[in-house]
Image (cartoon, rainbow over all chains, first blue to last red; front, side):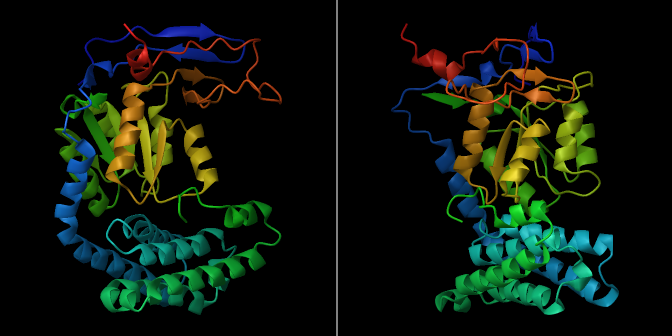
Length: 192
Length: 181
């Protein structure tokens, strides 16, 4: 869309690689504005997000139901590959969405659950309560957001769950260095 | 300072989560974008990529059928139809360093860890528009140069052979703007 005509590609050849440079096909979409220009696209987008925020509680509730259904299917039929993937995706979506939707403690608990699913050598051997506690905590944080947040329990709950999960994962991965390294590595997200 | 004319850009957004697609659409539209195509899995995204020829792809990692990493690898086929040089922004809940490395090695241009923010998304888009990196093609990699900076004090083996590096850096528009006259 932004391209005027196909740009000429220059190729520099080396013994084991090529360096390919093409004139920037998107140069036409940049425009210079004076510093005093008051239009701020980021502020505009933040405002649009704020306008959308009335939907967030409902969306979070839908995500929470999806997680509970995935867990119920596992309790009924065990950990098939399909059931595992559904539980992981439901938890992973909450991990990614919940902070945007105003539930950062739920995101932290969901992250802890994702780590269990990703790094436990055998999910069938993970204590059922460990997974259940995560699901229950996420549900409680989302459904009782205002009261639980008010008394400051949500963050502490997520922190404790993460501590227990990490202790379990460290123990069961003692002979799996690649998993151990991933479990102990710091997150790239600032502030975590 | 420079601003992006978002109304001249065509986006392809790929995320299996409808709520996240709505967030992304809201952000892109409020930046000024008019053309935002959406797909909920990697396979559909690949079809849409060939059909709509987007300027920028924004993709999630974890998705059914094939994921965002595989989508990036399929886009980065030098002989494929479509535009293998298209900037790919990976927007994901994965936040481990090894995931960033995997995404980089699949040819992803920018990595943005969730939770998403308007500022973070804008910065990544600005970066791919204003500072495109040269592409490197080796036996097992085709994608943007994974070396973002030249480190003159680097000590260690040179993994690219061929003597002195002769990367043809394309001066970014922002750099050009800083040069007087």
